[in-house]
Image (cartoon, rainbow, N blue to C red; front, side, top):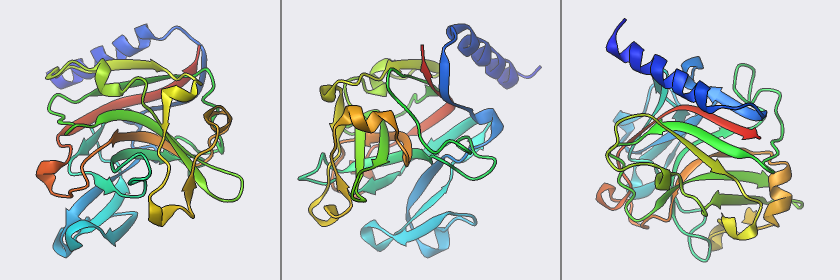
Length: 250
């Protein structure tokens, strides 16, 4: 057996040993493909546009950004900077953010959210197996987030700021780490991303306890806050590998 295969097997055994039952509300292992998860490639010229993409648009510095299916290699989602600098929640919202990866609920057949139109996060623990030995956060924190619709057609976005994911990682550690974070319903555990002045018709805030009961749009991972400068040297950088994501009520 090759060394890489041994490492994957040991990591899978480690994760299995760490689980003690409970109600799994969502789980995806990237050995089964991207499962509907997406990421962005940004600061692209027209010649750099990927052969396959979901959407592309002109973004910062008159260059392109493209949403793509998250690349998967060796059973892990591969997320490499530069990520999209999202201005939708700029002040007076919570700030600029680096959008790392996300998955939409009620995805198409074959996706990890197929047939799952809503997700209840109440009493849920996030378990994510990842490694990020060279991640530079540029002053931000790596967080779990969700996006859900509100009455009246707007959307509420919340990031779990009480316990950033990077707080559970050891700097420079090249091994896979199983991060476990209990998602509290306390209002002060979450940061509502709010809205920039130009997106106030689309985003707002709602009671987080209510929002957690039935999120119906998307969830994933972001870095917040980040600089409003799109220059790569001012933004988070590095590489993140994610083997699995689980949301479980124990």
